[in-house]
Length: 169
Image 1 (cartoon, rainbow, N blue to C red):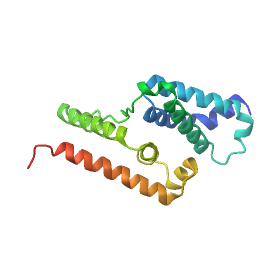
Image 2 (image 1 turned 180 degrees about the vertical axis):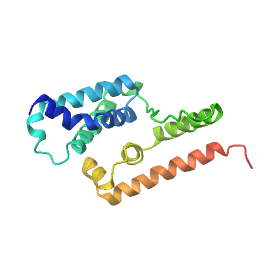
Image 3 (image 1 turned 45 degrees about the horizontal axis):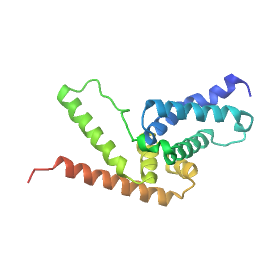
Image 4 (image 1 turned 90 degrees about the vertical axis):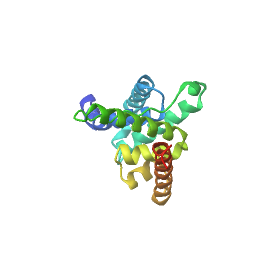
C-alpha cells in the first residue's frame, strides 16, 4: 500500500480519533499524542489494513483501548475530560456565555459518568456513529449500548436540570 492510499483511507476519520482521545484524556496535547500514536500503529499495519472491513471502527477501538490504558497508567492523576467542539459564531454574548456554561456543566457531569457511558455518549451523540458501528467498536450488543446511552443521558439530564433549577421554587 502506498502512502497516498494509506492517507486516503485514514484521513477522513483522523479528526474523530482525535475527538475521542480528547474526550477520554486531559488536553489537546494528550489527544494529539494519542492520535499520532494510533496513526503510527495504523501505518505499521498498513499491509493488513486492506483486510479490515471497517478501518474506521478498528481505529476507534484502538483509540479507546489506547486512551483507557493511558488513563490506567500512573499519568492518570493529571487527566480530566474536556469537550469544546461546539461553537456558534452568530449567538449573542449572553447566549454564548450561557452555552459555554451549559457545555462546562455537561463536561463536569460527564467526568462523573462510568467510562463505558462516557465512550458511548461520545461515539453516539458527538461522533454520530450508528449503534451497529458502536457495537463493533466496543464489542457489545446493541441493546447494552442503548441501555448505557439512555442511562448516561438520563444522568446528564437530571444533574443539568438540578443545576439549572437550583434556588428556583
